[in-house]
Image 1 (spheres, rainbow, N blue to C red):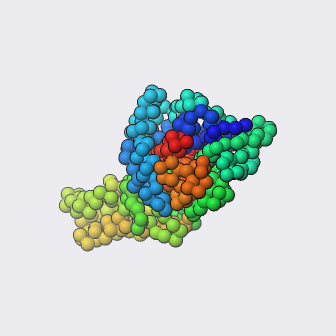
Image 2: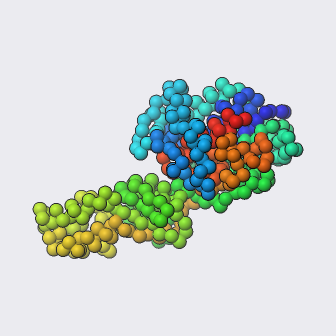
Image 3: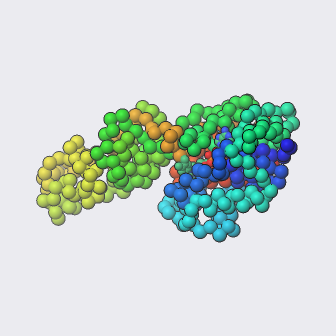
Length: 389
Ligand code: FDA
Protein backbone atom coordinates (compact mmCIF):
# COMPACT_ATOMS: atom_id res chain seq x y z
CA UNK A 1 0.00 0.00 0.00
CA UNK A 2 1.28 3.45 -0.94
CA UNK A 3 0.49 6.61 1.08
CA UNK A 4 1.88 10.11 1.01
CA UNK A 5 2.38 10.26 4.77
CA UNK A 6 2.71 7.64 7.49
CA UNK A 7 2.35 8.91 11.05
CA UNK A 8 3.53 6.68 13.90
CA UNK A 9 1.51 7.39 17.07
CA UNK A 10 -2.08 8.57 17.44
CA UNK A 11 -1.47 10.70 20.51
CA UNK A 12 -1.90 14.44 20.81
CA UNK A 13 0.84 15.39 18.34
CA UNK A 14 0.16 12.61 15.81
CA UNK A 15 -3.56 13.36 15.59
CA UNK A 16 -2.97 17.10 15.26
CA UNK A 17 -0.46 16.46 12.50
CA UNK A 18 -2.87 14.09 10.71
CA UNK A 19 -5.56 16.77 10.78
CA UNK A 20 -3.30 19.03 8.72
CA UNK A 21 -1.22 16.64 6.61
CA UNK A 22 -3.93 16.30 3.97
CA UNK A 23 -5.55 13.17 2.51
CA UNK A 24 -3.47 10.11 1.78
CA UNK A 25 -2.28 9.99 5.40
CA UNK A 26 -2.20 6.82 7.49
CA UNK A 27 -1.80 6.97 11.27
CA UNK A 28 -0.86 3.80 13.13
CA UNK A 29 -0.81 3.16 16.87
CA UNK A 30 -0.31 0.00 18.89
CA UNK A 31 -2.94 1.05 21.45
CA UNK A 32 -6.58 0.06 21.18
CA UNK A 33 -7.75 3.69 21.33
CA UNK A 34 -6.21 6.97 20.17
CA UNK A 35 -5.12 9.71 22.58
CA UNK A 36 -4.99 7.64 25.75
CA UNK A 37 -2.88 10.23 27.58
CA UNK A 38 -5.34 12.94 26.59
CA UNK A 39 -8.11 10.81 28.10
CA UNK A 40 -6.47 10.49 31.51
CA UNK A 41 -4.96 13.98 31.59
CA UNK A 42 -6.03 16.74 33.93
CA UNK A 43 -7.97 14.34 36.15
CA UNK A 44 -10.14 13.38 33.14
CA UNK A 45 -10.78 16.98 32.08
CA UNK A 46 -7.59 17.55 30.04
CA UNK A 47 -5.60 20.68 30.79
CA UNK A 48 -5.34 21.24 27.05
CA UNK A 49 -3.34 24.49 26.93
CA UNK A 50 -2.20 27.46 28.97
CA UNK A 51 -3.08 31.09 28.38
CA UNK A 52 0.50 32.09 29.16
CA UNK A 53 2.27 29.48 27.01
CA UNK A 54 5.52 30.81 25.57
CA UNK A 55 9.09 29.60 24.99
CA UNK A 56 10.10 30.37 28.60
CA UNK A 57 7.86 27.55 29.83
CA UNK A 58 9.89 24.87 28.07
CA UNK A 59 13.17 23.05 28.75
CA UNK A 60 15.43 21.98 25.90
CA UNK A 61 19.14 21.86 25.10
CA UNK A 62 18.24 24.56 22.58
CA UNK A 63 15.72 26.91 24.25
CA UNK A 64 15.14 28.72 20.94
CA UNK A 65 13.97 25.63 19.05
CA UNK A 66 10.34 25.71 20.25
CA UNK A 67 9.82 29.39 19.40
CA UNK A 68 8.80 29.14 15.76
CA UNK A 69 6.11 26.45 16.16
CA UNK A 70 4.70 27.98 19.37
CA UNK A 71 4.47 31.35 17.65
CA UNK A 72 2.83 30.07 14.50
CA UNK A 73 0.29 27.78 16.19
CA UNK A 74 -0.58 29.37 19.52
CA UNK A 75 -2.88 28.63 22.44
CA UNK A 76 -5.37 31.05 20.78
CA UNK A 77 -5.38 28.94 17.62
CA UNK A 78 -6.15 25.85 19.67
CA UNK A 79 -8.88 27.76 21.53
CA UNK A 80 -10.43 28.67 18.14
CA UNK A 81 -10.51 24.98 17.28
CA UNK A 82 -12.07 24.13 20.64
CA UNK A 83 -14.68 26.87 20.11
CA UNK A 84 -15.53 25.57 16.62
CA UNK A 85 -16.25 22.19 18.20
CA UNK A 86 -18.35 23.87 20.91
CA UNK A 87 -16.29 22.45 23.75
CA UNK A 88 -16.87 24.40 26.94
CA UNK A 89 -13.81 25.17 29.06
CA UNK A 90 -12.69 27.10 32.11
CA UNK A 91 -9.47 28.51 33.53
CA UNK A 92 -8.59 26.69 36.74
CA UNK A 93 -5.52 28.57 37.91
CA UNK A 94 -2.36 30.16 36.48
CA UNK A 95 -3.77 30.24 32.94
CA UNK A 96 -4.46 26.47 32.89
CA UNK A 97 -7.46 25.68 30.64
CA UNK A 98 -9.56 22.57 31.25
CA UNK A 99 -12.67 21.11 29.61
CA UNK A 100 -15.87 21.68 31.59
CA UNK A 101 -16.82 18.16 30.52
CA UNK A 102 -14.59 15.18 29.79
CA UNK A 103 -11.24 15.04 28.04
CA UNK A 104 -12.83 12.62 25.56
CA UNK A 105 -14.24 15.75 23.92
CA UNK A 106 -10.71 16.73 22.86
CA UNK A 107 -10.08 13.25 21.44
CA UNK A 108 -13.40 13.33 19.55
CA UNK A 109 -12.51 16.76 18.21
CA UNK A 110 -9.15 15.55 16.89
CA UNK A 111 -10.75 12.41 15.40
CA UNK A 112 -13.32 14.61 13.64
CA UNK A 113 -10.56 16.85 12.28
CA UNK A 114 -8.65 13.79 11.05
CA UNK A 115 -11.79 12.49 9.30
CA UNK A 116 -12.37 15.89 7.74
CA UNK A 117 -8.80 15.82 6.41
CA UNK A 118 -9.28 12.29 5.07
CA UNK A 119 -6.66 10.63 7.29
CA UNK A 120 -6.91 6.91 8.02
CA UNK A 121 -6.33 5.46 11.52
CA UNK A 122 -5.16 1.92 12.21
CA UNK A 123 -5.16 0.90 15.86
CA UNK A 124 -3.55 -2.21 17.42
CA UNK A 125 -0.85 -1.87 14.76
CA UNK A 126 2.87 -2.16 15.31
CA UNK A 127 5.91 -1.28 13.27
CA UNK A 128 7.90 -4.43 12.48
CA UNK A 129 10.53 -2.99 10.19
CA UNK A 130 11.49 0.36 8.68
CA UNK A 131 13.85 1.40 5.91
CA UNK A 132 14.41 4.30 3.50
CA UNK A 133 15.53 3.92 -0.11
CA UNK A 134 16.60 7.52 -0.64
CA UNK A 135 13.20 8.74 -1.77
CA UNK A 136 10.56 6.80 0.18
CA UNK A 137 10.12 4.99 3.50
CA UNK A 138 9.19 1.32 3.55
CA UNK A 139 7.42 0.19 6.71
CA UNK A 140 6.26 -3.28 7.60
CA UNK A 141 3.22 -2.97 9.84
CA UNK A 142 1.58 -5.78 11.78
CA UNK A 143 -2.10 -5.00 11.42
CA UNK A 144 -5.12 -7.21 12.13
CA UNK A 145 -3.13 -10.43 12.07
CA UNK A 146 -1.18 -9.78 8.90
CA UNK A 147 1.94 -7.92 7.89
CA UNK A 148 1.28 -5.00 5.55
CA UNK A 149 3.97 -3.21 3.52
CA UNK A 150 3.54 0.55 3.47
CA UNK A 151 5.44 2.89 1.18
CA UNK A 152 5.37 6.55 2.25
CA UNK A 153 7.10 9.70 1.07
CA UNK A 154 6.85 11.21 4.57
CA UNK A 155 7.29 9.54 7.92
CA UNK A 156 6.19 11.42 11.03
CA UNK A 157 7.37 9.99 14.34
CA UNK A 158 4.89 10.94 17.06
CA UNK A 159 5.26 8.06 19.49
CA UNK A 160 5.93 10.25 22.55
CA UNK A 161 8.38 9.65 25.39
CA UNK A 162 9.03 6.97 28.00
CA UNK A 163 6.62 8.06 30.73
CA UNK A 164 4.05 5.54 31.96
CA UNK A 165 5.16 2.35 30.20
CA UNK A 166 1.97 0.69 31.48
CA UNK A 167 0.06 2.91 29.05
CA UNK A 168 2.17 1.71 26.12
CA UNK A 169 5.01 4.23 26.12
CA UNK A 170 8.01 2.94 24.15
CA UNK A 171 11.38 4.22 23.03
CA UNK A 172 10.51 3.78 19.36
CA UNK A 173 11.10 7.47 18.52
CA UNK A 174 14.64 7.31 19.90
CA UNK A 175 15.38 4.08 18.03
CA UNK A 176 14.16 5.56 14.74
CA UNK A 177 16.19 8.72 15.42
CA UNK A 178 19.32 6.59 15.95
CA UNK A 179 18.57 4.50 12.85
CA UNK A 180 18.61 7.65 10.72
CA UNK A 181 21.66 9.22 12.34
CA UNK A 182 19.94 11.64 14.73
CA UNK A 183 21.24 12.24 18.24
CA UNK A 184 19.07 11.64 21.29
CA UNK A 185 19.81 13.74 24.38
CA UNK A 186 19.86 12.21 27.86
CA UNK A 187 16.33 11.38 28.92
CA UNK A 188 14.93 11.38 32.46
CA UNK A 189 11.52 11.35 34.15
CA UNK A 190 10.10 14.85 34.65
CA UNK A 191 7.01 16.33 36.30
CA UNK A 192 7.42 13.51 38.78
CA UNK A 193 7.11 13.14 42.60
CA UNK A 194 10.39 13.12 44.53
CA UNK A 195 11.18 10.40 47.07
CA UNK A 196 13.17 9.91 50.31
CA UNK A 197 14.49 6.49 51.32
CA UNK A 198 13.51 7.07 54.98
CA UNK A 199 9.82 7.82 54.32
CA UNK A 200 10.19 10.84 56.62
CA UNK A 201 6.86 12.34 55.61
CA UNK A 202 4.75 9.21 56.03
CA UNK A 203 3.16 10.60 59.21
CA UNK A 204 1.93 13.71 57.39
CA UNK A 205 1.01 11.95 54.16
CA UNK A 206 -1.87 13.82 52.50
CA UNK A 207 -1.01 17.23 54.00
CA UNK A 208 -0.65 20.04 51.45
CA UNK A 209 0.62 23.60 51.84
CA UNK A 210 1.26 26.52 49.50
CA UNK A 211 4.99 27.11 49.11
CA UNK A 212 7.80 28.33 46.90
CA UNK A 213 10.06 25.47 45.86
CA UNK A 214 13.40 26.40 44.34
CA UNK A 215 16.85 25.32 43.35
CA UNK A 216 19.58 27.12 41.46
CA UNK A 217 17.77 26.63 38.14
CA UNK A 218 14.10 27.21 38.89
CA UNK A 219 11.49 28.43 41.36
CA UNK A 220 7.76 27.68 41.53
CA UNK A 221 4.98 29.03 43.76
CA UNK A 222 2.35 26.32 44.04
CA UNK A 223 1.20 23.65 46.47
CA UNK A 224 3.49 21.02 48.00
CA UNK A 225 1.94 17.68 48.96
CA UNK A 226 3.58 15.41 51.54
CA UNK A 227 3.29 11.71 50.67
CA UNK A 228 4.29 8.33 52.09
CA UNK A 229 7.22 8.17 49.72
CA UNK A 230 8.21 11.85 49.81
CA UNK A 231 6.98 15.00 48.11
CA UNK A 232 4.48 15.68 45.37
CA UNK A 233 2.03 18.43 44.39
CA UNK A 234 2.43 20.91 41.53
CA UNK A 235 5.41 22.84 42.98
CA UNK A 236 7.39 19.60 43.40
CA UNK A 237 6.44 18.23 39.97
CA UNK A 238 7.61 21.52 38.45
CA UNK A 239 10.98 21.58 40.26
CA UNK A 240 11.55 17.87 39.48
CA UNK A 241 12.26 18.87 35.86
CA UNK A 242 15.14 21.03 37.11
CA UNK A 243 16.42 18.66 39.83
CA UNK A 244 19.27 16.15 39.59
CA UNK A 245 20.20 13.28 41.95
CA UNK A 246 22.29 14.42 44.90
CA UNK A 247 20.98 17.99 44.80
CA UNK A 248 18.96 19.89 47.37
CA UNK A 249 15.69 21.69 46.92
CA UNK A 250 14.60 24.57 49.15
CA UNK A 251 11.03 24.89 50.37
CA UNK A 252 9.80 28.30 51.47
CA UNK A 253 6.63 27.85 53.51
CA UNK A 254 6.09 31.62 53.69
CA UNK A 255 6.40 32.69 50.05
CA UNK A 256 4.54 35.94 50.63
CA UNK A 257 6.92 36.89 53.43
CA UNK A 258 4.17 37.79 55.87
CA UNK A 259 4.97 35.45 58.75
CA UNK A 260 7.55 37.43 60.70
CA UNK A 261 5.39 40.52 60.74
CA UNK A 262 2.34 38.49 61.81
CA UNK A 263 4.27 36.75 64.61
CA UNK A 264 5.48 40.10 65.92
CA UNK A 265 2.00 41.60 65.81
CA UNK A 266 0.40 38.60 67.47
CA UNK A 267 3.08 38.74 70.18
CA UNK A 268 1.65 42.15 71.08
CA UNK A 269 -2.05 41.27 70.93
CA UNK A 270 -2.03 37.54 71.85
CA UNK A 271 1.29 37.09 73.60
CA UNK A 272 0.07 34.08 75.61
CA UNK A 273 -0.59 32.03 72.50
CA UNK A 274 1.99 29.30 71.88
CA UNK A 275 4.26 29.66 68.85
CA UNK A 276 2.92 26.37 67.47
CA UNK A 277 -0.70 27.52 67.79
CA UNK A 278 0.11 30.77 66.05
CA UNK A 279 1.88 28.96 63.23
CA UNK A 280 -1.09 26.63 62.84
CA UNK A 281 -3.07 29.70 61.80
CA UNK A 282 -0.78 29.93 58.76
CA UNK A 283 0.15 26.30 58.05
CA UNK A 284 -1.64 22.93 58.36
CA UNK A 285 -1.55 21.80 62.02
CA UNK A 286 -0.09 18.39 61.17
CA UNK A 287 2.75 20.07 59.32
CA UNK A 288 3.45 22.38 62.27
CA UNK A 289 3.45 19.36 64.63
CA UNK A 290 5.89 17.60 62.31
CA UNK A 291 8.24 20.57 62.16
CA UNK A 292 7.91 21.59 65.83
CA UNK A 293 10.47 19.31 67.52
CA UNK A 294 13.30 20.58 65.32
CA UNK A 295 12.35 24.17 64.76
CA UNK A 296 9.97 25.58 67.36
CA UNK A 297 11.05 26.74 70.82
CA UNK A 298 8.82 25.92 73.77
CA UNK A 299 6.74 28.69 75.29
CA UNK A 300 4.46 31.47 74.20
CA UNK A 301 4.94 34.21 71.65
CA UNK A 302 5.61 36.76 74.40
CA UNK A 303 8.57 34.70 75.65
CA UNK A 304 10.53 35.19 72.45
CA UNK A 305 12.67 38.01 71.13
CA UNK A 306 12.63 39.31 67.58
CA UNK A 307 15.80 37.31 66.99
CA UNK A 308 14.16 34.02 67.99
CA UNK A 309 11.04 34.68 65.91
CA UNK A 310 13.18 35.64 62.96
CA UNK A 311 15.17 32.41 63.39
CA UNK A 312 11.95 30.35 63.28
CA UNK A 313 10.76 32.11 60.15
CA UNK A 314 14.17 31.70 58.58
CA UNK A 315 13.91 27.93 59.10
CA UNK A 316 10.46 27.82 57.55
CA UNK A 317 11.57 29.89 54.59
CA UNK A 318 14.72 27.88 53.88
CA UNK A 319 13.76 24.27 54.46
CA UNK A 320 16.57 22.42 52.70
CA UNK A 321 15.83 18.86 51.61
CA UNK A 322 17.83 16.36 49.61
CA UNK A 323 15.49 13.86 47.91
CA UNK A 324 16.95 10.43 47.24
CA UNK A 325 15.24 9.94 43.92
CA UNK A 326 12.01 10.22 41.99
CA UNK A 327 9.10 7.89 41.31
CA UNK A 328 10.54 7.45 37.81
CA UNK A 329 8.76 6.82 34.53
CA UNK A 330 6.08 4.84 36.36
CA UNK A 331 4.34 8.09 37.34
CA UNK A 332 6.24 10.85 35.49
CA UNK A 333 3.94 13.02 33.38
CA UNK A 334 6.61 13.59 30.76
CA UNK A 335 10.10 12.67 29.60
CA UNK A 336 12.75 15.35 29.76
CA UNK A 337 15.05 15.27 26.73
CA UNK A 338 14.55 13.26 23.57
CA UNK A 339 15.39 13.51 19.89
CA UNK A 340 18.00 16.28 19.66
CA UNK A 341 16.70 19.46 18.08
CA UNK A 342 20.10 19.98 16.42
CA UNK A 343 19.26 17.96 13.34
CA UNK A 344 15.65 19.19 13.00
CA UNK A 345 14.10 22.24 11.35
CA UNK A 346 12.37 24.35 14.01
CA UNK A 347 9.91 25.53 11.37
CA UNK A 348 8.75 22.16 10.05
CA UNK A 349 10.17 19.56 12.50
CA UNK A 350 11.72 17.82 9.50
CA UNK A 351 15.11 16.13 9.65
CA UNK A 352 17.85 18.21 8.07
CA UNK A 353 19.55 15.07 6.77
CA UNK A 354 16.70 12.72 5.81
CA UNK A 355 14.07 14.54 3.72
CA UNK A 356 10.53 13.52 4.64
CA UNK A 357 11.39 12.36 8.18
CA UNK A 358 9.68 14.36 10.96
CA UNK A 359 9.74 14.15 14.77
CA UNK A 360 7.00 15.88 16.78
CA UNK A 361 5.54 16.11 20.30
CA UNK A 362 7.11 14.69 23.43
CA UNK A 363 9.55 12.54 21.43
CA UNK A 364 11.55 15.72 20.76
CA UNK A 365 13.87 17.36 23.27
CA UNK A 366 11.28 20.00 24.20
CA UNK A 367 9.60 19.58 27.59
CA UNK A 368 6.97 21.86 29.04
CA UNK A 369 6.12 22.88 32.56
CA UNK A 370 3.10 21.46 34.30
CA UNK A 371 -0.11 23.26 33.32
CA UNK A 372 -1.12 22.53 29.72
CA UNK A 373 2.24 23.41 28.18
CA UNK A 374 3.07 19.90 27.01
CA UNK A 375 -0.16 19.58 25.06
CA UNK A 376 0.44 23.00 23.54
CA UNK A 377 3.82 21.74 22.30
CA UNK A 378 2.10 18.64 20.86
CA UNK A 379 -0.46 20.86 19.03
CA UNK A 380 2.15 23.39 17.80
CA UNK A 381 4.75 20.86 16.64
CA UNK A 382 2.06 18.59 15.12
CA UNK A 383 0.59 21.54 13.24
CA UNK A 384 4.06 22.70 12.07
CA UNK A 385 4.84 19.29 10.55
CA UNK A 386 1.32 18.72 9.21
CA UNK A 387 1.12 22.03 7.37
CA UNK A 388 4.66 21.60 5.99
CA UNK A 389 3.87 18.21 4.42
P1 FDA B 1 1.59 10.65 23.40
O1 FDA B 1 2.25 9.87 24.44
O2 FDA B 1 0.36 11.40 23.70
O3 FDA B 1 1.23 9.72 22.14
C1 FDA B 1 2.13 8.75 21.66
C2 FDA B 1 1.32 7.69 20.95
O4 FDA B 1 2.23 6.79 20.34
C3 FDA B 1 0.46 6.87 21.92
O5 FDA B 1 -0.86 6.80 21.42
C4 FDA B 1 1.15 5.50 21.96
O6 FDA B 1 0.22 4.44 22.10
C5 FDA B 1 1.82 5.45 20.59
N1 FDA B 1 3.02 4.60 20.58
C6 FDA B 1 4.07 4.63 21.43
N2 FDA B 1 4.97 3.70 21.08
C7 FDA B 1 4.47 3.06 19.99
C8 FDA B 1 4.93 1.99 19.18
N3 FDA B 1 6.11 1.39 19.43
N4 FDA B 1 4.17 1.59 18.15
C9 FDA B 1 2.96 2.19 17.91
N5 FDA B 1 2.46 3.20 18.63
C10 FDA B 1 3.22 3.64 19.67
N6 FDA B 1 0.08 17.55 29.48
C11 FDA B 1 -0.65 18.69 29.46
O7 FDA B 1 -0.29 19.62 28.75
N7 FDA B 1 -1.76 18.81 30.26
C12 FDA B 1 -2.19 17.81 31.08
O8 FDA B 1 -3.24 17.92 31.73
C13 FDA B 1 -1.41 16.63 31.12
N8 FDA B 1 -1.73 15.61 31.98
C14 FDA B 1 -1.03 14.45 31.97
C15 FDA B 1 -1.39 13.42 32.83
C16 FDA B 1 -0.68 12.23 32.82
C17 FDA B 1 -1.04 11.14 33.79
C18 FDA B 1 0.39 12.06 31.90
C19 FDA B 1 1.15 10.76 31.84
C20 FDA B 1 0.76 13.08 31.05
C21 FDA B 1 0.08 14.30 31.08
N9 FDA B 1 0.44 15.35 30.26
C22 FDA B 1 -0.30 16.51 30.28
C23 FDA B 1 1.53 15.21 29.29
C24 FDA B 1 0.94 14.90 27.89
O9 FDA B 1 0.04 13.82 28.01
C25 FDA B 1 2.03 14.55 26.89
O10 FDA B 1 3.04 15.52 26.90
C26 FDA B 1 1.43 14.44 25.49
O11 FDA B 1 0.45 13.42 25.48
C27 FDA B 1 2.50 14.16 24.46
O12 FDA B 1 1.87 13.97 23.23
P2 FDA B 1 2.53 13.04 22.11
O13 FDA B 1 1.52 12.93 21.03
O14 FDA B 1 3.87 13.52 21.78
O15 FDA B 1 2.71 11.63 22.82
